[in-house]
Length: 93
Image (cartoon, rainbow, N blue to C red):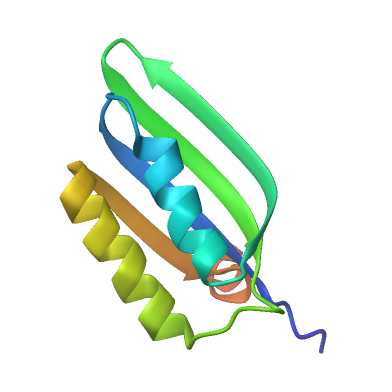
């Protein structure tokens, strides 16, 4: 079995300046590489999906999850991170 060290991050909320900067700053501080990113503004609503590489992260997954959640709270958006292998397992049916 291949050890997939990627994760999927989703960000949802009302659009305003600084969301992308705030989330990517947390990832940069944790040494997490962004592999792919998609961002859309649907009227006033901000949506973003990222695929990130966790191989070189410098903190535990649950710590990263907590920091992203806290940053999201400060920015007024909902941030979730899920390991890619868990995401694949949940959506295989």
